[in-house]
Length: 503
Ligand SMILES: Cc1cc2nc3c(=O)[nH]c(=O)nc-3n(C[C@H](O)[C@H](O)[C@H](O)COP(=O)(O)OP(=O)(O)OC[C@H]3O[C@@H](n4cnc5c(N)ncnc54)[C@H](O)[C@@H]3O)c2cc1C
Image 1 (cartoon, protein in one colour):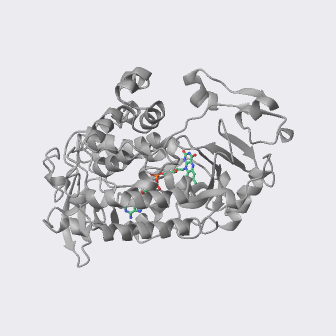
Image 2 (cartoon, helix red, strand yellow):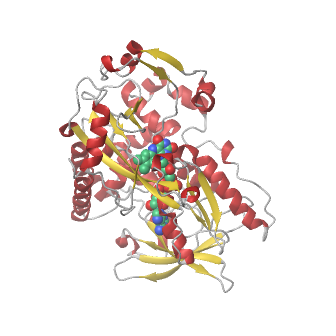
């Protein structure tokens, strides 16, 4: 299967390996436990970068409006029961509205900043509506376009609360609920009925320094005690590797899945069965847990089914009111999920507008990889020397930002010293923090260290150190009081502690 989905494109097919060859790829394995293996070729991605570049492509190339820290809290219907709008609440950076409370979600709406501002003294994006490069529509009426360029949505401020939180209504001809494991909560806002579309499955990973778990490739290992597999995977961007994942039913809060001592024991037992030198819980540098939105549909009557057996397929369903819900699937299938949801939305518009197009996501290249020859050129030593980058820094930046790398280097010219790492043990650079704030709506230390970079999943101690280092950059960038940002750091540090409570 992997030959068909990936190998054929790069001309590499699976093959059988001798035990020595397996050991070359995975030197930490105990040679006595390996009789042979297979090698096959799969895709790998920096999920944080992929998600951001998809979003950026939507905003910069297709006129989408992205709103950060903005939560759907209600669904509104007309007298016939058709869904007409969403009530949303923005919940961060109250102070940013002080000057002009009218532009509702202005602070969160990154509307088309194709060139980041380069003045170090004023790196703030707290009011994107004042940006010269922002489009003319204001957040009080942020319109998006469908494929026919007709206006399909608009927003209006409905209330500003004492605590600075702002509620507003977003009207649209079609509304899509694409909230992963949270889809049922959103559906119940629409119908007052919890549908159980999703059966949440918890996945936990544990990270190690590569000195403890050296790997030259990712490995799939069958778990001795059950029919599951676990993976051992080197992080692409830093000298860490991780072991995972568990796949167990989760009936706790979706917002806060926990990595329990049992999860850690399960993973350590599973991996240690194969290792030369066993790993201990004291070797773990970080843990993290997430919830997969597995489809429950075809298994409604089979509560005994293991989550590992449940479908990784996705579904697109219409509610009676016309809300479209897409869920299930995998990161790997995101384009197919998007296509199916957008095509369904277009079919809704069919009845009211002469919309005949279909999603063309299949042919869209995302920002950073739009020009393959430019990307190829960036990988040449001579180009990297011209940019003044060491091969390691060049590889790190090109892997993360693709053809945006020269723009990042240009930005660094305005911030002396910003091509230095944030902390010595990690390859992430100070300029990436500034880029994340200016280009990617990063508001908090957690946004940067867990959602723009993947540091908090690799090493909790290094992440704490980095949080302290970048707090002053954030304070200046968002024009926030340093004490305010310090509180942010404390909250984040506490959440890291909670996340790693079992260690
Ligand atoms: C441990 C683990 C390992 C995985 N490994 C892989 C893998 O190897 N390969 C692979 O392809 N996939 C993998 N996945 C699956 C993949 O991560 C998910 O399928 C994917 O993230 C789902 O994307 P999504 O956009 O549907 O949902 P999400 O990525 O969960 O996004 C949903 C968004 O909706 C937002 N939201 C929720 N409520 C509201 C609200 N009221 N208002 C506004 N926004 C809201 C949430 O904040 C979130 O940002 C893994 C998942 C886990 C947990």
